Length: 79
Image (tube, rainbow, N blue to C red; front, side, top):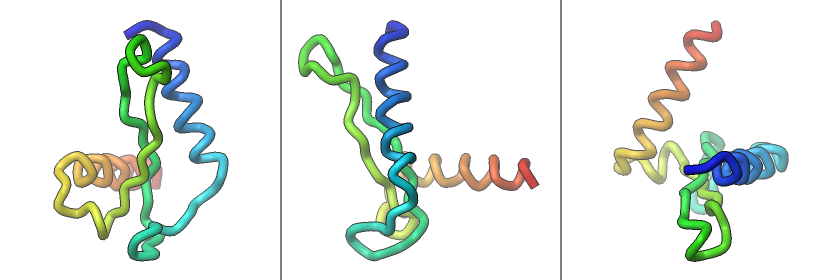
């Protein structure tokens, strides 16, 4: 993974975050995390696509559960 790829993924997440907090489009929940799913930019032409994970809707997804656990841990350590 080269620096251009990492920078593009970071820009994508920053653009999603800059739009501000939005409720989940499915359940209306307010605990939504923006993430990026990396793609092969040489094949597709983009580095990643933005994905929003909802704590309630995606509770059964191990990837989402890990993201929310890390977020909770980071928020606790900031207090």
